[in-house]
Length: 114
Image (cartoon, rainbow, N blue to C red; front, side, top):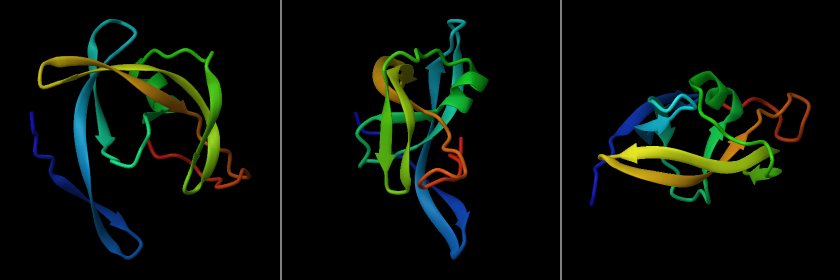
């Protein structure tokens, strides 16, 4: 199945940038589904969700499989678990890294945008 994903404008320092964004329905800890906006990154190894966003939306995850997520702008603590989403009426169980926002003084320090 192919789905066309529109490019959404985003204001950056030099003007506008366009990125593919989708809204997916993710299962919450209450058994219902919540809408979460994702930016598609074809170079990513796993889906990533900031811990703050998961907590705010009631997305369950375990803090037992702990590790370090590394990327272009540095590293941050992560918890590997699963994210349950529905796309076009089909349920999927994806491996997901739930990311802690790096502290301002850490390498790559800043904050993740939920």
